[in-house]
Length: 450
Ligand SMILES: *Cc1c(COP(=O)(O)O)cnc(C)c1O
Image 1 (cartoon, rainbow, N blue to C red):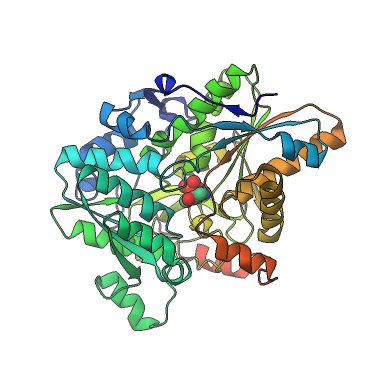
Image 2: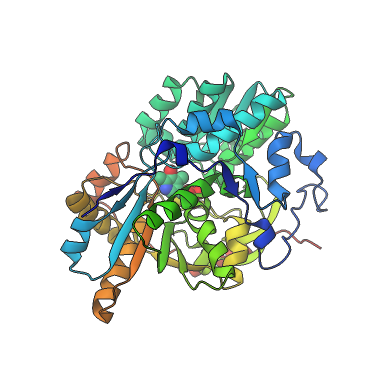
């Protein structure tokens, strides 16, 4: 019985899959936060290198992965697909459960799949320094690694609550040469404005984005980098799904359902988009994103134009949103606490092509522990949402007596998140439904577009 399905190094995909030409309709325009008019590529040049701006709107279905990016990808790619024999046994399910494991990257998650090409396109553009933000620290560590490999300087605004909760993420970033600043900071107007109102602010991803965007926009040698949400990030992550598809082909399987956890949408897009493409060709594979009930962007937000950040400096996109001033509760899956979602994933959810479900934190940790005790790997708290989803599908298959094939993305390991597991075992974690009043209040502050 095969357990690991390994794609040889010479079969690493050489192109990313761009879903834009296959979307169910034209993309909504991206709006300039100042003028409230659609942005032009020139408006984005202070923030991003041209190579990434082009990818953001490209109508080319297959985009070549540059050789220098492939060379670095090969340090951990192709990543393995595992058949979860032991988990299947524990669940006593007729379903076959496969998982694609992205925790094998140096940073321990899928995020380097986009950090590496982002650093590359900045390098060839002439950028000297990257400013970015990080929530739980996975993106910050991934972009620090990537900047180190391409000889770029890197400044990371890290959400203060994570900076204090996750000191080892900070250590990883510093080891890879980055300058890490707790956010809100006194280094930017945006940070100072927040601190003036609330000196003890714990920060949020929205605030940290404001600081990084301001930093990048105010320096010629600096560009901004975002670890999720944007079209080019989803594009880079499709290498996950492309490999997984080839790996399942090697064992003669094809999934009935494809599952990922959903924060800003990048790892979900990565595993899902290559399969969504098959749906357009008449294949009825289900594709489901799992998000926390405490930050229920896709399941309880609205599909509307909103700012990408709290200080309204980042571009305005049409996406599912809880409102740019949404203040997430301090749940332990820090990477899933963004108020918005990828515009591409949002459009697919709105069109009914992709499904979204919300799950509670305790049920996710329960799934993560069951997974660790059967499969061995300790998942990131974010990834546990996908595991919950996969286990529930497998249990449903058992009820229905169906031999379903389930594929989920295990987006990262939890080695730097053991404090979250300690809290879970100490009974310190609670379930939390974001209150309807708070959502409606935030939604009153959406920008008026058009
Ligand atoms: C950042 C992160 C996520 C959430 O981000 P997406 O853009 O939604 O993928 C999920 N899992 C891990 C391990 C992460 O680091």
